[in-house]
Amino acid sequence: MTVFKAYDIRGRYPEQVNEDLYYKIGNSLHILGTKKAVIGYDMRESSESLTKSIIEGMRKAGIDVIDIGLSPTPKLYHASHDFDADTGLIITASHNPKDDNGIKICRHNAYPVAWEDGIEQIKNAVHNFEEKVAEKEGEYRKEDYDERYLSHLRPMLDCKKTLKVVLDAGNGMGGHDIPTLLHNAENVEFTPLYCELDGRFPNHEANPLKEETLEDLKKKVLETKADIGIATDGDADRCGFVDEKGRFIPADSVGALLIEYYAEQGQRHFCYDLRSTKKIEEIVSSFGGEATKTRVGHSYIKKTMRQKEADFAVELSGHFYFRFGEDFLYDSAIKALIEVLNMLSKEEKTFSELVDKYMTYVKSPETNFHVDDKEKALESLKQAYKDAKLEEIDGITLIGEKWWANIRSSNTENILRLNFEAETQELYDKKFNEIKKFIENLS
Image (cartoon, rainbow, N blue to C red):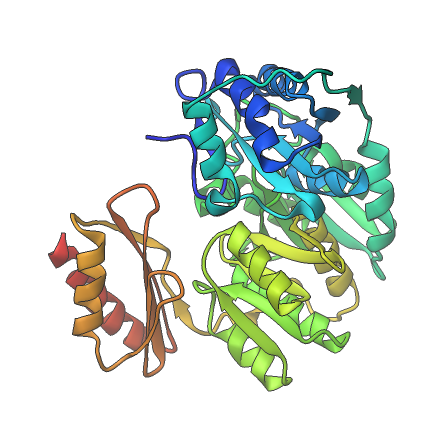
């Protein structure tokens, strides 16, 4: 299986990704027009060595490099903008297992590099590798960016009343900046959980999308009588929230809450991925705003945000996207936490009371099915549900009377992914099981 994915580069170390591959990738980045790059890396045991190799490859090709060291992905995005680099790279495998590693790449203003934007070119250059040796080796400098980044974040956090917060960083990069911000914040009582950086992930997988990884966070929230809990993934661009009752709150419900909060401030343009609750569309319509449904994946959502000049976007996987300037936007767990705390501190209601209004419909977890022929299976579904409204933004979305279902293909496997929502439990039980059985019979 190729390590060059739709949105990034990722694989098992050292069998699939290693120092030789990273040197070749770094040396090939000139094909993207890279002249100055900012690079950071996560806490995985292989990350520092891989970073040295990719830097060596870039410098040999004449690319100047600014190394900010240990860094969550959002901080790398901000540093690449701050230092006016044409390319940013973060060495991380995000929430993947401890033996994996990878690279996320962006262009100027944190513009994502996906398959069609450059990853395919890099793959081809590496597979047909011809080393570039520039007349002048690229310059290198190490930058301590921590305080500069925190000084950007501190003014954003404005808690109007005391809030108790628990952070479970899962030993990932969420433990790098967020504790420093919260420990010194006014009106925040902060309890850290697994905030020590450890790429072996000794306590649990750093993936808040899997609710089983949130058990310790839920217990700690209840134990400390906290107002809110947050868990971050391995590179801290994604997060999950827990309310004061210890309930996991889906990202689309948190996104709906923030959309209403922003609407009160005059914002009108929003994006959401097509797996998100229909409540978002209903809420935006209620105040005359514009909600654009997007395909899954951070690079696609960021492109749509730029095209639609959207103020904010949410993805069901726990990505929250914010605009930091006219053409500068990215996803950030720490910014999501800041915004939720600011909003919560202005309300008399608890977090659970605020989000309950967005959780009245019945949603399925994302359900995977192995099929021999994905395209044939999707066509069969279209024919079987001709009476439903059809959208083909990403896979197919069938929109029926008080229900909808999205079925889309995996990029790498013979798998279909089903997301379903209905307005009542009775309709959910009937329609979800009907579609589920139909897909199973196609396998």
